[in-house]
Image (cartoon, rainbow, N blue to C red; front, side, top):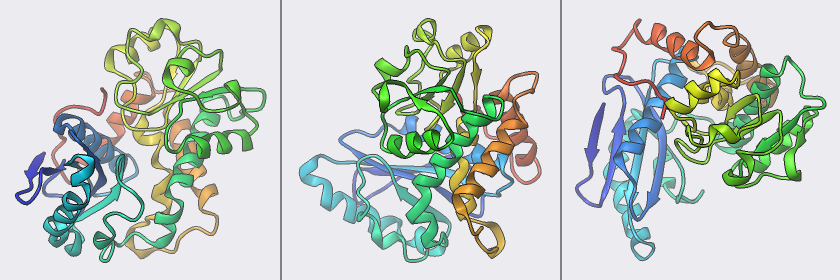
Amino acid sequence: MTTRKLSTTDAFVVVDLPDAPVAAGVVRLAPKVLIDGATWLARSQTYQFAVFGRKASGASAGINAAADARADALAAFEAEVAPDATSGSLLLEGGRGIEASDLAALRGADPRPAEWWEQRSALRAAGIAAAAQAACGGSLEGRTVAVEATDDAAAVAEALTALGATIAGGAPAPAAEVLTAAADVLVVGSKAGVLDHEAVPGVKAKVVVPSGPIPVTAKALAALGRADVVVLPDFVTTAGHLVAWPDGGAALPADLPAAAAELVGIAVAGLLDHPAGPVLGACEQAEAFLTTWAEIPFGRPIA
């Protein structure tokens, strides 16, 4: 893993596998973006690519700027990383603190099609809903799902209800409410480690479906396993967007949401019976692919 600190503004870019042909991930902006957190976001993305057979690295960037310095910091960041973006070796999308119109200068050489940019949130939501469905035996009819409020929570809730689920409380809610909600399924993903071992005793759901990177800590994963709660791997559940970013210039599926649901649903179904559980099973699957072309990075994507 490499961390490049920019010289023209207080910002950095983390690339998990420096020798990968391409690295992709999010850019976040806040008064203080921690490098440690960014490294785990990059690692989760690396494992997502690997599970689905993509020779690519995860990346994560942070811009440290107060509100009154935001515009200048963004401009400096764009200018300094533009050579990598133009070459196609670094693909970035906006994360927390970044507006849709920001970083437009980095889009010019980005190979991801317009459909990816326009539908990536909906495709991730379709995959998350399909993951929940697979973990519930293939049907969400009659199931109650507690959805944590995040930027994409409305799309996730819509995808779940389309499959027959009922949203606990009628709408997504903050972590403090959903973690202890009376529900069959818990969807969380606002931040890394939002579900830790201290919260486990209050969890009533029997399935935990991540909607964002590494929301479950290692101690919570172990405790939930002892309680017979199925925890799915975030780098699989959030992978629906990959159907709009095909390898080798292949044509996009005609029905992208259906393709996203199929991609994730099949992957989750294949992990449910793994003797070490879905999360560790997915890690092993990702690492098996990584060994064919890269060194396995130290540390699995578990908070």
